[in-house]
Image 1 (cartoon, helix red, strand yellow):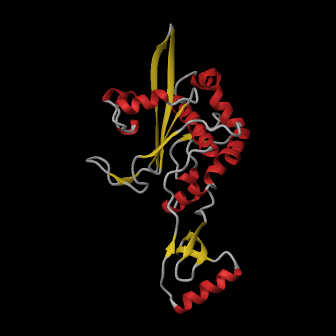
Image 2 (cartoon, rainbow, N blue to C red):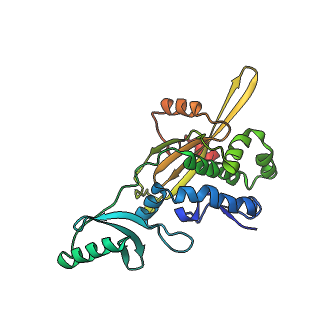
Length: 263
């Protein structure tokens, strides 16, 4: 009955959505709680959303912890309709903060930068979920492809990893920054815009003995961080070889005209 945002709405996605019927409601709810929330509530998840001032479904931005330099106290900061609000997390620190502001009404807050997220269990499951839904999104208008995606056993290992987890095992994901989070794009046709997220599929076909092998990689960019994952196996060898052969360019920006037409 519900739609599924391929990249969560709390990361600024209103455009790429699987229509009702492609993800069942129990799975949708489970993924939101067990897969999306751990990534969103991680230090990187909160800091990156705060820096980009991205609101969640309730219209709120994350609360992040910082440091008020003049008073030497911790502070919690959050965007509001009137700017950034701040408060001290304890009564003792509140007294120090207020005293400092009375004597010195200007000063600096120090905040950690979001940087690039470490690859861990939560990140791997989150990117795996997006990768499988990105594949479904690309096939949604092709008759019979819903059944093909669901019944294709080559996706079962990643699908099981996302849905049921495998504590202690981190599915390989290639992670790097390809442009600043707040980068502005423009060309002769498009006005200046920011790209919060984008994704595409990179496919390889080769023969292993007499068997034809197809590998599908999802290449996903969120706030300028590129994540690449193999949908069929926990293996990045083919993608790493492609990177070496293409001077480590991003597939999102290095496709040939034929590949662009196909996508």
